[in-house]
Image (cartoon, rainbow, N blue to C red; front, side, top):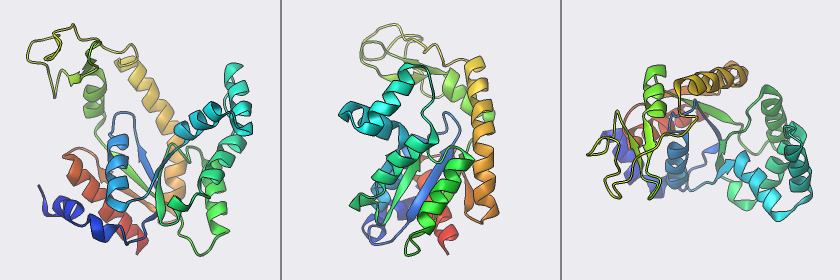
Length: 238
């Protein structure tokens, strides 16, 4: 383990006393953003805020926002920024967000980024958002996605390139035939990447123009990548 990665492990008690502020974690499909978000939550002791989780929670609880969103979804419509923004605004009032939080899936568009910046600027005692993007080579991401196989019995996940089963096509534990998800294909992946780039590029350029953007190599050991993100946030906060 590298010295920086070791520092992430050994410095968690110290990290709990620091104030990382709001962090937008960006990354293409398959880049490992979810894994890194969990590492940062452990390191800083701050929550991860996922708009997908917020939406599902409001729908499950039957809140006014949840009912409005559910009706739109059932009619095949997208949930508008106004509803998503209000869900985020409610979540940011919770006391566990005072020191900071990891944003996952929001802001996804430039209008959402402008809304969030405006909301945070209204509370000058707080910190602005910094954005960190995980970068992994396209072909490596493609192998991560198209190489995935899972066991229908125990849900164990393999990758035919980086983590293959001992017997080709069969689960090591159950012996069941492994399956590939219908959307883990090169065609679907290419379309998801195009959509991600089109939607995210304006958000990246927005934060880059304000000196609040950094890119981190997302190909490597989990702890080393986490250390790179922590270092990037510390640089952006100076």
